[in-house]
Length: 146
Image (cartoon, one colour):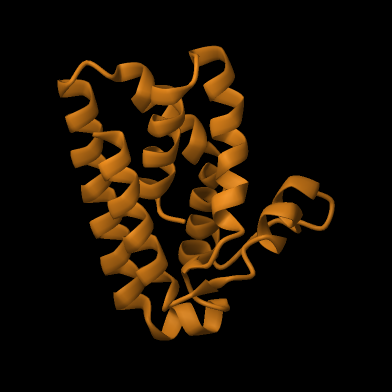
């Protein structure tokens, strides 16, 4: 799932649940969302062939996330934003992996890292058409957040 959808989910959890409970549930929500069909490419070769599309999606996602963050802060919902970042936080490992893979062509072996292996395994429904699922989810989540 995109950063925007993870942020929205964490913010919704912070809106409807007491803060101490919302934080671990926001973290867990990350893996639930990633197990759903969402935008992505089946493998590195496919992503490399469509690198421009991938770049545009990442750019739009970052811009939407900044707009959402600004909107939440402007409405005094800083705690919602923090919970949203907790929901996104497991993807921070992908930033490192993307930079190491794309820019330097080297990665440390992940066989011993159970967290990364689990995270990779649940991403099996990443497809280009998953962008439509993500768009519908984002619209619904934003409406629920308002």
